[in-house]
Image 1: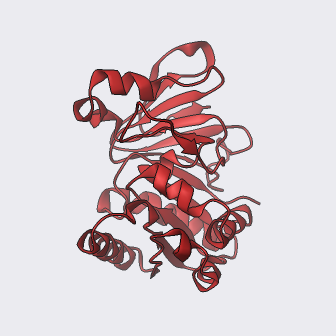
Image 2: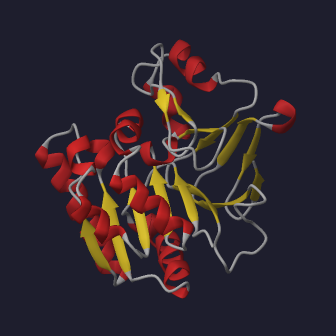
Image 3: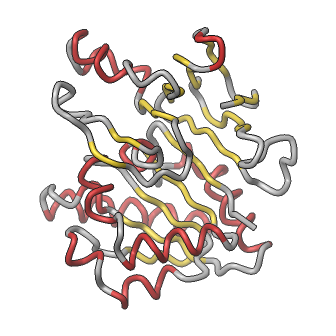
Length: 248
């Protein structure tokens, strides 16, 4: 049975996401998984050592609050992603978290590696999987070039099918020019485009929430902001708040 899956607009490892991350952990533990919290910072792999250490410390603070075991895997390059010792540590994890950075780099680095095989296998058997910002963007079939929107994107992990996620949506238009924003929001006809605000997530697969399921393509909103269905069934934009169900 697949584990829970969360797509977050921002907020990984912060107190604002603590309740959600606890639910994700509890869901996996109830399915026989370990009380472990796997941090995979690959999306930030091209950033400075100081920045990478910041993510490790932030995750450690969250694991203390959650009373779980932090496992920070320093997977920064394609070579790191081939490390079977790292992959072995992912087996039967409670929560596997792909954090922010460059979504295209994340996907290119992990696809067709022992690390991604271990992540997918763990999730398929009940581990919870979360992607925040870049991690959320990479879950679809295609990842647009978030930093250079006029350039071609790359293949994504394909776990959520033809869904394009725009994280930090409530800050999105203040960051990039309107022309670049339109490029990111333009997708093939069969693709659903969603925007997820900061400190907000879409979640499916929690066993204590049978109303939503991965198989039925239904998700629930968690957090302080909104999820925006920008283009989907009927091509009508709609905004969903905490607790509401989104059908994708």
